[in-house]
Length: 105
Image 1 (cartoon, rainbow, N blue to C red):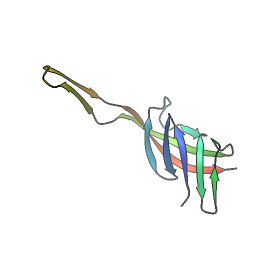
Image 2: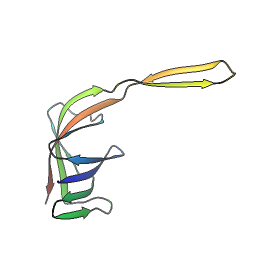
Image 3: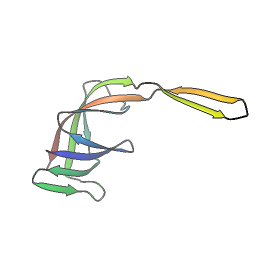
Image 4: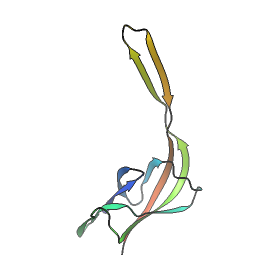
């Protein structure tokens, strides 16, 4: 099983080829190819590659499938005995990316 750990928009993801992942909004068009070069770790069935902090010779290629918004998250704040209540909702903008392959040069 070949996988990589990649840093995208300040978060780290365990990435496998052929699967899709929901990431924070990436401002590009649908169907466009993207390359992720902040690869921290690769498990390539024969060997383990560990970056310090990143691997220079590894690139993860993906394709943007769609842009959408996540489900609503309700934020409710209440101060007891003060009659203070505040209810807010939040929907995060996301991009679905299909990981096509992990290239090691």
